Length: 100
Image (cartoon, rainbow, N blue to C red; front, top):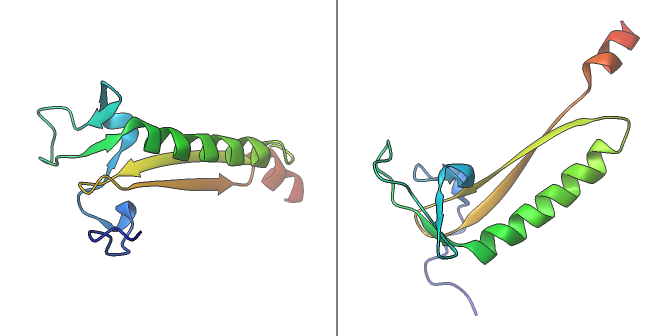
C-alpha cells in the first residue's frame, strides 16, 4: 500500500529534516524538543528509527572492520515522520601518510 503523503523526497532533502540525536524520546515517539531553532515540528515512531539505526550500525561496523576505515553515520527524520540514514566514509590518516 502506498503512502499518499510520499512525494519520493527523502528527509535529507527537506528543510524540515533534523538529526534524530537532537530529538527527545517520549513514550516510544521521538519529538522535536521545545524550543527548537529553527522551529521545526518532527515526530517519528521509535521502531522506525531503531530499524534504521540497526542497519546503519551494522553497515558501519562491517566497514570499520575493513582495514580501519573511518565510518560515521547520522540518522535524520523530517516533519512527515520519514527516517533516513547517511554514512560518511573516510580513508584513515595513517593510510594516506603511508602512500606519501
